[in-house]
Structures are given as C-alpha cells and as structure tokens.
Image 1 (cartoon, rainbow, N blue to C red):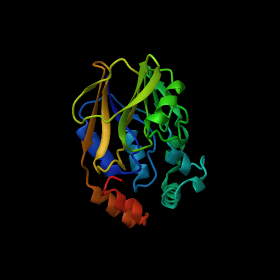
Image 2: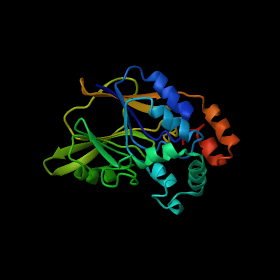
Image 3: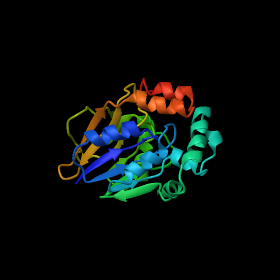
Image 4: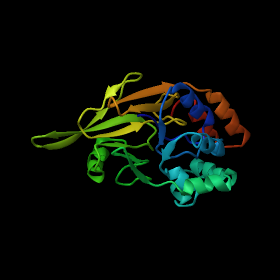
Length: 244
C-alpha cells in the first residue's frame, strides 16, 4: 500500500491540487489535520479531500472554527482567519470537521496532528520535546503535523539511556524506515515554515517500508490573490512567498 501523507493544507487549494497532481499513484490519503484556517478555500479543500479514500485527524485550526478551542489563544491574524472561515463553511463541512478524531491507529501506525501526548495542540519542534512523546504511543511510528516543518525524530537506545535524534530528510528518494521508533512530520501543504515556499508532503510505501519526502511548487500568487479578495490579513498573504 502506498499512502499520500499530508498535513496543514490550511485552505490552500492551489497547493493541495499541486500535491495531488505530482504525487503519482497512491492508495489512500492520510491527512494529519488543519484542513482549514489561514487560507481562502476551506470548503473547496474539504471537498477535494473527500474525493479520495482518506483518513483525517483534527487539527487545532479545525477545532478553532468549531469553537472547541478559545480563539483568544491564537494570534490576531489566526483569529481573523478563523472567524472568516466560520462564516464560509457549509453545514456539511462543519459536520465533517466535527467528525474528525484526534488520534487514529491505522496499519499499526499512529496518526495525530500535534503530538501523541497532546494530539491537537503541542508543537514538536525540538528533540527535547519529541523524546518524552515516545512514551505516549505504542506503535513503531507516529505521524504528526502542526509545526509545518518536514522532520523525522528517531529514538536511539544506548547503554546509559535513550536520546532522540533529529533527521532532516532528503528529498525525492525513498528513505528506509528501519527498525527504530520514529516520529515523522511530512511538513505543510499549504503554509510551509522552513524557508521553502513549495508545498511539502510524503509518500509512505508500507510494502517496501520506505518514506519519500517531496516538495512541489504551486502558484502562490493565485492563493494570495484569493486571500486579498476576501480581505484576509496581509501578513498571512505575504508569508506564503517566503515559506515562513
């Protein structure tokens, strides 16, 4: 089975379509949350995901538009975008977001948005945060999103204890998954934050036990023009050009 692993689409249809066009053959999509928020196409992105066999977990922005999180915990631009998204979502798409679980176990793998310890909200940005999170899932691999940065954390056991190794995965070539436990982040489709504006995603091949990281350019200006048209915050528009 080949899985398209995506996260943090953030209502960016142009980026999502570019990923789908470049991904090649796959059997199913695993989406790690934050379908909506920030971007101009929330209904369209939900509809596009539903065209495919998929699994999806809830992200913090998905919960924000449902008022399951306090918007005061978000920065002002995110609050504005969330309120705009609330006004746009169809009843059916609200129901879809409400149905998303916070954690899934599929094919013996764990799927969350933030972290296995705090599935909706915690940012796993450093090995020091990743290390204790290995105690919160029982599978060999856990897939996360939320940080918008493509990374792999590997648990290494030594005679005097254990530590977490940070791996910056190379692009466009299969990486053997190996036998160690991993926390895997495919990066963000719709709002990368690693200084690379291209959409980020991964292909998981369970038959060959490999994962392949990919980046694909998309028409950023198309998304930006749509955001400008509906008066979304200027900072959210400009950051797409820089991948930050």
